[in-house]
Length: 228
Image (cartoon, rainbow, N blue to C red):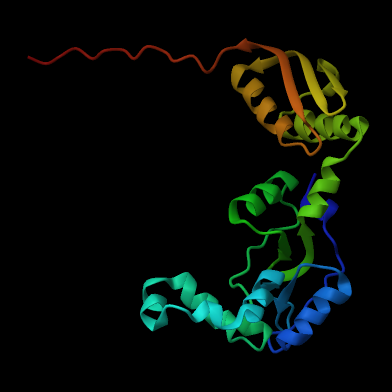
């Protein structure tokens, strides 16, 4: 499953010069927690989130410790700038963490988790084409067994490994996946396991797959004769 399959195409955006007051009103009006900041060509400059707006509400708290603390603590200095912000450009987090529309949903989830963000602007050739949120990924996880099986058959068996689905026996029950059969190489079985575990909606994977060639066994290295 790709990002383009779950993303929102109609994206609420603001310009760099939008006032922070207007940004807050936009978040409330649309019931969202963050908004991309784009230029006239729809190129993403950054993202303003509820957290960025909260720095403004905290006011002087972020300035405690004096200028020396700001010099020693880059985060404190950046937060102090957000506290003084009056426009989206001044409050936004930049550069924005983005993703492409044909990237996998599992990669989007990993990027959100690793970077601690709740949304990813989706860009193609540098231009905003959508947005994907954690809520979108959660909805993608709630899929029927039939949908999960179809993706495994088409994207994993056929496209990734060039295996005809009928050569393997696939069972999906409540998101629990079991595969039986035989593949050509041990490495194919390893790749099969990794790819299936990345399919949205899969909660567990059991492999009963064997292989004809164990290409992962280390071969002994021939010893060269020592020169005297």
